[in-house]
Length: 109
Length: 121
Image 1 (spheres, rainbow over the protein chains, first blue to last red):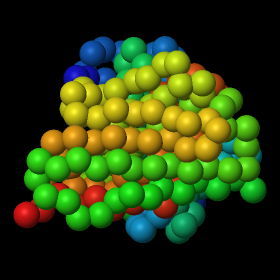
Image 2: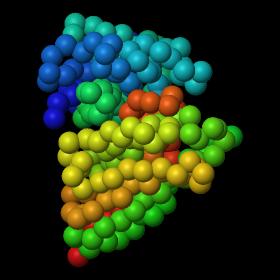
Image 3: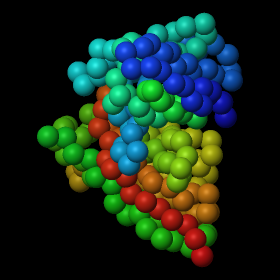
Image 4: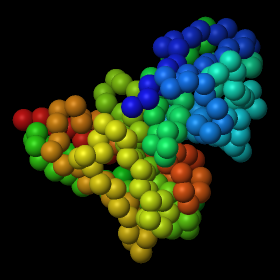
């Protein structure tokens, strides 16, 4: 099974910008892996932020954006807010089967 | 209002089986794929399996595919996850989630709050 890699932890200052990445053990991440990004806060179910590389949804704050960067999927947070402190997971698709990354714990400090 | 509700979790002994249910409402159920995702205590998310809206296509992750079966009853707006030969490592909260369309394996916009499964003797 493929392994999806994320930074275990990152810290961003309030108002700052941070980029989380999502890599694949099978090679470059492309749009064909349909990368999704989820946010999860303690005790809550995950919440979809971005689908198919860069599609935001009506509930996704505009400060979150998705892209492909250097062979990886990327989630950029511009103008971090205290409420953005959470775990972030990417999900890639491999012939119909999904594989989550290990998650990035984002601290806003 | 879209609602997704898992049920059927509980305490089971190693080697036993369990069937989880995922009941949904507030949307045309047969038009959307449903996924199962689990999360062990203090750990990350693990994608388990998914089923297309009509139930004609199923997707399974490598780690569980020999021990789980996903199915759905579109008359009852319910998806089921049959899990067999459970192990301690299967202890987790099991979430089900609606997809964005009839096909595709990704959990998406609506999730339940999860049902806990504990495998222990």
